Image 1 (cartoon, helix red, strand yellow):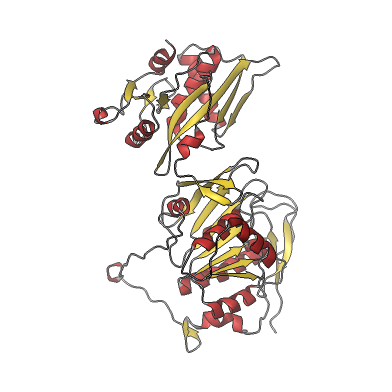
Image 2 (cartoon, one colour):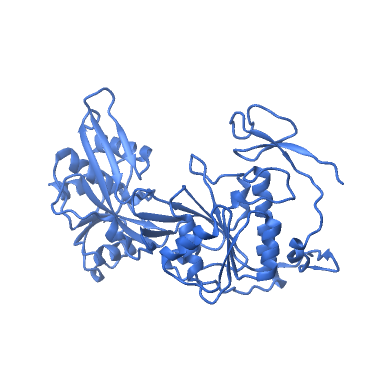
Amino acid sequence: MAKIKTLYFCQNCGAQSAKWIGRCPSCGEWNTYVEEVVEKTVPDTAANAWKASSSVGGTSKAARPKPLGEIIFEEESRLNTHDDELNRVLGGGLVPGSLVLIGGEPGIGKSTLMLQIAMQLNGLRVLYVSGEESEQQIKMRAERLGRQQPGLYILTETNTQNIFRQIDQLQPNVVVVDSIQTLHSTLVESGAGSVSQVRECTAELLKYAKDTGVPVLLIGHITKDGSIAGPKILEHMVDTVLQFEGDRHLTYRILRTVKNRFGSTSELGIYEMQGAGLRQVSNPSEILLSQRSEILSGLAIGATLEGNRPLLVEVQALVTPATYGTPQRSATGFDGKRLQMLLAVLEKRSGLRLGQHDVFLNIAGGLRLEDPALDLAVCAAVVSSLNDVPIRGEICLAAEVGLSGEIRAVSRLDQRLGEAEKLGFAEMYISQFNAKGLDLARYGIRVHPAGRLDEVLTGLFG
């Protein structure tokens, strides 16, 4: 029997040390080092049968270098998940042999989404591995979703050797694991959820996915600061990282791409949580624009892009006199530092007195956006609230604001114009540099090109 070797691992970032230290030199956290066993002799079991299929005579095939010109590239067909939002986020569907990690806060709906996807894969054998819920709990959720999938198999197990034994017998087409932090391998002498266990279990699932071509979907927990729990190497090992966001007290959920080796990293999928599961939202612009019976001040509509999807969002601003001490600057769903910059531009270039006012900004619908094309809408909403003059409801804006007060061009304006026209908007303010080379006659919307911020404010408020 091999000698057992132990090392100390940081439970925050995964750094290792030969001895215990109080402060991690990598991430700077205190008292995060835990001793873990890293070597142990494991008897050969039937659970490793799937590994033997990739070797010849008990020895693995050695890879040999090939010239780039001799490598044959064949476009692999993606697996349709029958979920348009997930297909868009993944880049067109599940890639065979890919490892996908879905993270999100507790109770946000990760397990519901994955079970719903598994029940939609008709004609395929899907193995749903749960280490957090019993078979009865999963059956209860499946009854609530109201779908039947004869090819869906449920396995409540946390030992990876037992899981691979069942995989070898079932030969599934898709594997779902809920969650990676609950699995443990006998190859590592430490508790489930530790750095060593998460790394080892992910490595085993990664080897299985690449050797067999079966896509594996992993559900992951997150830490209190919103990052995926476990070592950072976990996100490096997988092919795709998806973040499931939203407020548990609201109905809308956002599936965002953080990393994708097979597609764009800026795609967005929107769902609505209902009693019968998650409903896809095909036209999110309609739900992001609040329903109001009267025109109010402090509201402006901005045209933004998330990946290839154009969105019209409502920017809400509230400007009030600062009664106590230093004026407050608060932004929800928008970069607070960029808000400070835009307020400085309004004060310096437009002569507005905002230094003695509290400014609160909110992006309606719970979205978090970083598109600079929202700058003009933010400025318009702030001025509207400051002067208590509403902006007409048929107007939207799409332009970046520079430090000298100039209106700068934004990308893919044609998609933004098309979305605004589809939703019935009559006018849009854009940069004069965007108007060059753009055929505005084919749009049923009046376009106002502008070169300075003052021109837009004069057009909106007179």
